[in-house]
Image 1 (tube, rainbow, N blue to C red):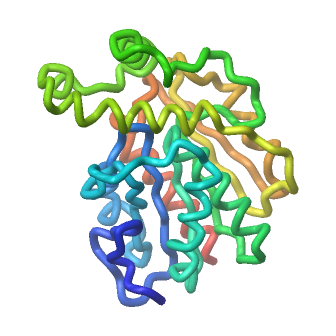
Image 2 (image 1 turned 90 degrees about the vertical axis):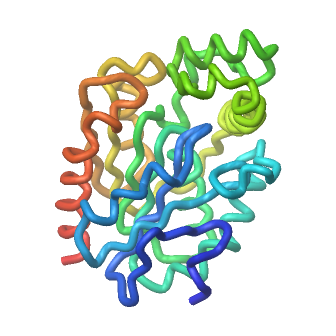
Image 3 (image 1 turned 60 degrees about the vertical axis):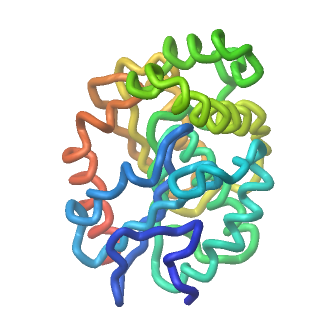
Length: 252
């Protein structure tokens, strides 16, 4: 296996003999740093492996992908050497699309399926979107749309023009990637799927979360928590407890 400390995969606490690798994909404008505390809240033999995309974290100067297809092509090359142990995917919002399409690409290439696909805060990709695209809006309108739908730009960034100038191009590219994603019907996934949603999230409702169950031959469960698009921030211990139980069951 190649060294996991690559530009793409950045485990905060690498394990010598993990029983499972949990690859984590962040939301639009997000950072792998949001997964820094997960290692200590999951079973000790699970290696948490955040994926750092171009434009995220230490790769903030790199040009972000604007098409899912090109990103998946690069991710396939980066991640396959690390699939020498059982693995699972966690995708949050934009990350749900990436995790899903990567799982499909791996299946098409003959790799073993993930033990689980965990998705959060994103409608199933075959469900028709309710919102109009925003990635091409002028800057002021783009910011307003982000804040209205997601409240997704931190106040500290909004108040610092230099930070905002760095943040907006990446966020806009992330939304272009999401909004140009063209779902193509293929064979269903073979892995179980667990989905999570926020009861007050204006961007996705429980029916759109439940629709993820239509994309796998295997089992499906979904959990709805109080909160908006960023419900995970307030319910992380409960969500990680669900993941821990599920991981243990999948490895026995």
